Length: 348
Image 1 (cartoon, one colour):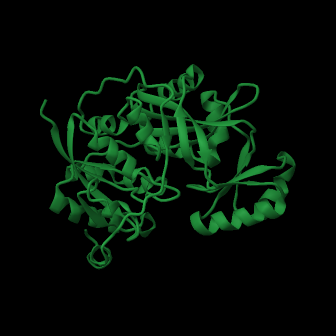
Image 2 (cartoon, rainbow, N blue to C red):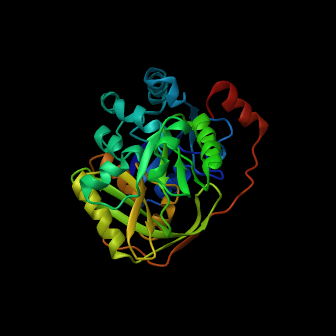
Image 3 (tube, rainbow, N blue to C red):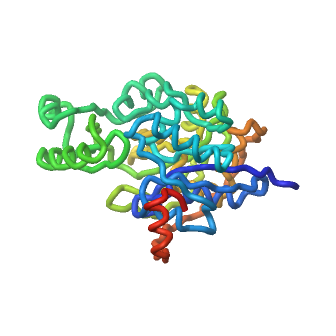
């Protein structure tokens, strides 16, 4: 079968201790039997490893940070598109999704396809909105509240018991055992990601996750549940194993069918000792462990690209249970002239 030749641009190439999903998404696309992809890396930092991984990424371009605004971003994308003729663009960071969603129509007019959640879907699953989300869709969620100062928490402290979880609006979560730790983590996260900070009830249990892909019409194209077997101090999975878990799958189908979720997602869940599932977070894109789903038989990056290109996609009906991933570090050797080229010209 002849493969579809497509130029696919994507971000999230920081394959470090808190890895972005970019490289695992690329690996899934490289495994595709239907897509022959030219991969264009969108890079925020000269030290992201992805641009130097020439067996995976064909060409890389520096792009402005989302905080710089929509116009500088679009101007850069127009230039890259002029050179590369991008077919599909896959953003892989939460912090950039708002910019991409706002620009979706403009990108489409340029000839660039995306497959992203709607603004309403993106906004209502925010950590600060999770209690309302739970009520609306009938999902167990821990009690949480957004705060803009440590004093806000002092005023509502009687609603919580220590320990509590202190979360950033995009990334980072820490367990705080007293008020001093709340203040410490509040300042640490706020300096990095801004306000509000979310204080969430700590639910004891086992961390489990589901990766899924919705078609925007209420159908689940694919879903794979896993349990973290090794967790870093940043709370990231450094190892995991696929599970047979009908309850997690039913919850995923329920959320996607009710919300008509469009695009990739990750449900972060806690299974309590009473065997109850609590949803602690919804990440609105494919997670960094997406290659486990590919290895288990569901190539979700390929399916995402097909949805973006309006190519018919049959839902996956099975996956391999007991498939494991173990993440590892690797010393990537880079020539200084390549680093200089990306730093000065913004291209590699």
